[in-house]
Length: 125
Image (cartoon, rainbow, N blue to C red; front, top):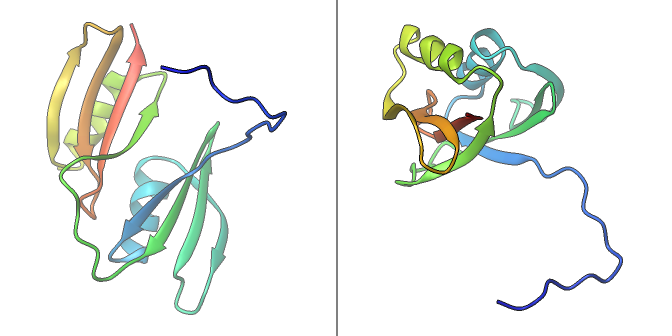
């Protein structure tokens, strides 16, 4: 592996972009269930939305023909992975990988949002 190039460029925020089939359903899930707040939306009907919570930011984009890939779309670090796992189970979301302590120092699980996006959630042990 080579040394990383440092040209004096500094990177700031990087936000995950999630494709969704139904913007209203996705908005309801991320706001009502996960506690995000909407900070921006664009289009009529809405085709793009920015949601924030704490240090996290998600961008939702309406993609009616989107086909879910068989891999994790994003990774989220949280302060209470057990609590989020309980919320996901209560909401009837599909748990792809069960909650467990990993040998790399995270307690983690993977769930699917209502549009089938796989989200890997972790908390340092």
